[in-house]
Image 1 (cartoon, rainbow, N blue to C red):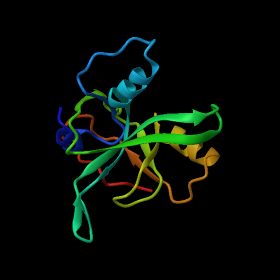
Image 2 (cartoon, rainbow, N blue to C red):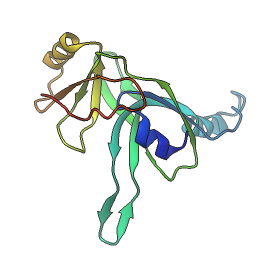
Image 3 (tube, rainbow, N blue to C red):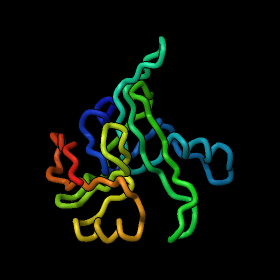
Image 4 (tube, one colour):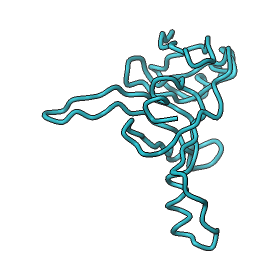
Length: 156
């Protein structure tokens, strides 16, 4: 899929893979392997942003993927996020759609909201929110799991 197809059709919470089409280098080539992994990886789609204008520059639409966390199991020190413009030359694939009935937890409402957790159901989402303090968090239940997913109506 192209980046614009991911932007249009992939729902927030989906697992996305991207690739530049090159073969993985052998493990002994540490620098080449590290560069290859930067262009061939996967993560969870956490945000979509429409085109923005700042002065004379208009940025193209983009989407952000959560690659990994750095820290211990209980304490996350750094979230590794990667943003892709729809102008990217990479090829994308949707590996997994969010399951029907799962609940997306966003850090705030509005178009610049970012997915911070995907819970299996509302009960688990509410339990997660009790232990992780996000005062402006918004819950959004996944109602569709197909390419026609337009559910951006977030409910607190």
